[in-house]
Length: 242
Image (cartoon, rainbow, N blue to C red; front, side, top):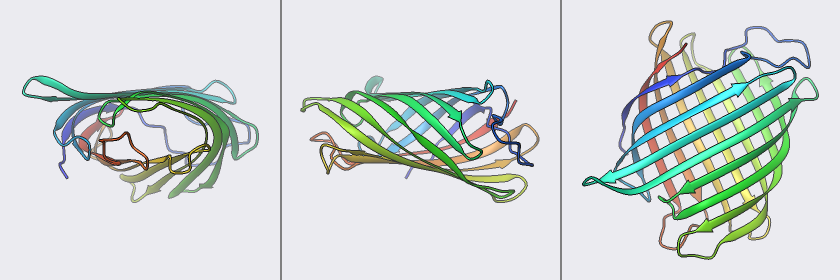
């Protein structure tokens, strides 16, 4: 699997040394991230591509409003072969010390995998299961609705059930390991389920710069005919925190 070198401008959420009182939104009032990288892909696409992504989080009292977007474009011999665009908008509200209610909208256009447009809406609950000096684990689950328009194939519309896990391990004072997993199951078609997993390792070089390596796996059990079930993205870059 190929590896890529890119430059990322990222403002990650701050670590928490001490627990805070219930019903207080943690982290900075506002923070964001932007990324520009060369990306190596496998599966439905095996050539090099250019990726751009960014995110923004706002934290008024008791709330967190997040938006994330990612764009990936593949070219060969000066021609665009495929591209993908993903946008997520999510709002969360804490109602108990470790529990949040959330609602989100997710849009996907992924011509690498034969998806013209996919719209998804979801509501659910997330729980902060572990919060320690070294380990952090957040689980969530919800119900929603999805409509997927496919290239040269029958469109899909169904109710959905989803579950996710976000785990962070502080390997040392300068290194963090993060794994984000999410799975979505159609409630109308049993074979129609998908899962995304991203594993990343970030090591501080100094107070501002870090080196980050990540691997993303996207799996669709019932893909568009003519496309593969699995796509992979490998990335290595330099992170600037501000």
